[in-house]
Length: 220
Figure 1 (cartoon, rainbow, N blue to C red):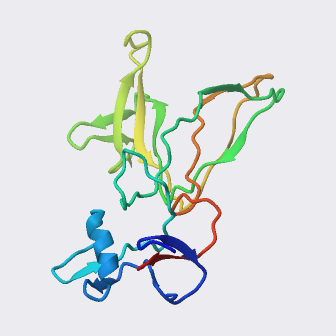
Figure 2: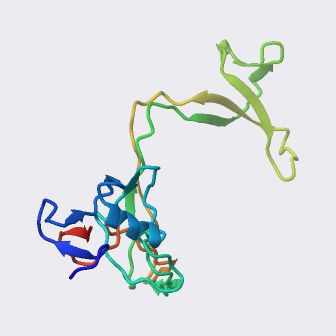
């Protein structure tokens, strides 16, 4: 004789005679008096009203024997036991590649120009119009270009009162482009790398053993 409240595995889709699938449904206390008495006497509460009580919803659940730290009929969520992974920083030297250089291209920088400063020695025939800040020489007018002078010599001392002149202007605008470059040649060498090993996430939405699908049924 199977006592009321016993739970078994059942490979069927419907309630067998004298049993109910544990799917959380609501039952009438008057329709299932023996099962209600069993729940009441054991303090099992899965939803109770004045006239009804609910079955435990054991769909997707494994059964587990309890110890003194758990209540009868209590539900426990999935979990992974606390643990650590031993991972230490790694110091690694790359393999020596011998005499070599590196070549690459810069990213495309878009259309742009570069400011430049053209230098020259000022002769006696050149003059700076202080009123317009322009460089003038025998009819040549530097126009709107920015001009200036700098002393030449050691520690700002001019040689023979000569001056070095300059004109500021921009290079012609160039559309989207990149620049190729090659590093200087260097001898055989290695590179030291220091990194921490970090694993990415893996797995699914729950932690579970290999399993087989059944219904948990309860005797009423």
